Image (cartoon, rainbow, N blue to C red; front, side, top):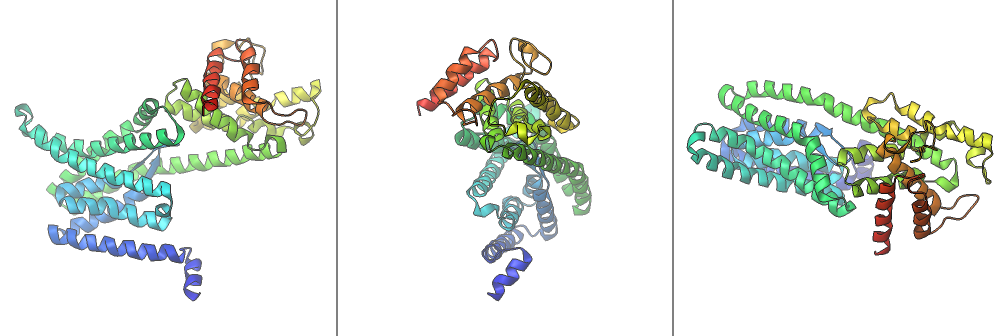
Length: 422
């Protein structure tokens, strides 16, 4: 009991502390093997320390992907020491910090660690094959090895993206090609930069020694640290806004979790329309926040069990402008503010607040309008019971070209048919 109390005070549960000791012992064993094989203790320990730092520097690119600096130092270990050192620097921080964070006791965390291990193996294999092959090409002799070095980490990051896209495709039914292209567009600049950075650090270590390499590594870490902070702050900001939107939903028991349902449906429709993943992500955010402006609408209006009067309806109509005004100053949300502002515009121009017509309405807003209407029709409200999906589709289809974008309605129809088919 005393041990458990001490563990609780330190914030590390007893079972996790035990697992950490086991993992640390295993890592130490691997270290002994690596050092014995390489006789390069100083570079190995330096690269291991940088590997731990690199595991902490995680730059979130989107809802589905992030870039980690740890593999940079793993590949430097490969070129300067050997394969055992590469595996040690690449996997020991992942396993150790993953255990401390609790990632490796969750199935998703185990999957992520396995993907990184497989990607590292692919990078190692590609490194040897490509470097050897390119060195045999006459006009590449002398530079083939250097180019092959860049291709090793490049193969690692590409395989990481491919495996991540495969997992999300299986879990959420996302179109694989669209997802893979979206993830690639987000990550490509970082992949190229870090692949070249790994090669450069390897060269500096070989030519100028560990101290010079450490100085160059500090420059790399400092360059990426602001990206890490921006990603974290963006995540915290979005979480805060989502909590506000959830609070709005909870003002009315009939609309509890409405924003989450609309966001899920909007994402499905956006992907069905073949939109690239970064745009899908912006639509998801806008859908989560589409009713944020209702925070300024009185509870007596939101909870009214009867239909609204004309004056009450005018008050309710302001919510799209208020919501857009709240998030518009936040540049990290991109064009989500425009989607929130216009998610009640109608295809024929009869909507609000600006009476936009047809394609002048942002596509994300058109998608959110259909998702919002479908959820409203299929859930209970104070003045009526929710209808079934087929009937809701008929109502929306009857207003295609009037209230709704016909193409988005067709996408909704495909979704309903697929769900009915099981």
